[in-house]
Image (cartoon, helix red, strand yellow):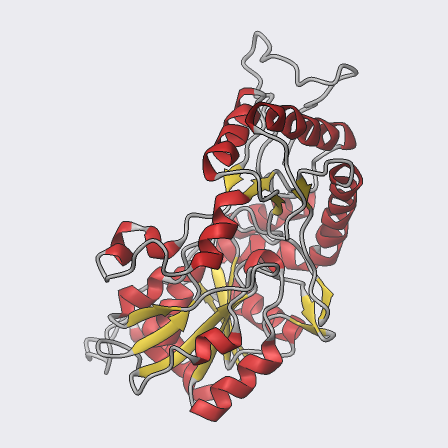
Length: 401
């Protein structure tokens, strides 16, 4: 929740007052109402706080929302992907094709499983993995493709489904950034053999930390639950089960918050669309940046963050300077994103700068701006105006082509 009045009649954010009130424009700010507070209060007063009937109810409601047969609540999207890989029997010696372009580093789960992440480059406009580039990476060791809906924009799922079917690979849909988006009329989370969601900030549905894995395969669902945690009736047993679980379930307190947010999801998404339209209104007057792209087969996009791309005359250092200027004006923003193949862990696996030129080009000129339901039009106007002023110091922008 936010009780901050961030912008007054002047066009600048007010200074911190004597009581130390935070006047920053935050990158994310969860949409929490009395409905969520009441749900959590009731959960805290119940005789059970650990994973139980409320978590099961959340699973059932989420599966129903997507029309999937099974949903398994998990502590995070990363752990959800790890459980999924384990359920498919993927581990040391196997390869998993994935994207190096991700704000949330869910793909780290591939390394945690013992398998090798094999990156393929992305589409310049959508930011999603390119099926043809993924196909070129398939070897006899490949066991799965993890394709994500980058920043809420759906991947080309028809092509990925055909690619996975032809090569007999598991298709895992990373929907951690895209709840509510639609491809050819269908909700994201319905395209992968298994799909993974995350409910931490700055996503629309927030329950602190947590996630959900959905599938129609009963064997995968059983495997997910087996690797996640023991059942209640197993915890008093001294019998060793066939596998050692991670004991990574979702508490009933977290699930209560998630259930309340799920019930309000359409309302939250609609309010975020209003913020998106306000951004578009002011971004259109700034020739140096391009507002987010929407592909031809995409029915609806619910953005994870409002990401703008700087013109081709801008460099990585000028992008960073703009982020710094926004920070000076107490606007929280972020470079979107640090390519995974340039991070130390993947550098140690042999990846180098220049391996994925599209990912690197996009990452050098993309900025994630504040995006949540509490933003006012004055704040959005101020954010874009601040970017315009900052761009004067680093060089004129150009349309991105």
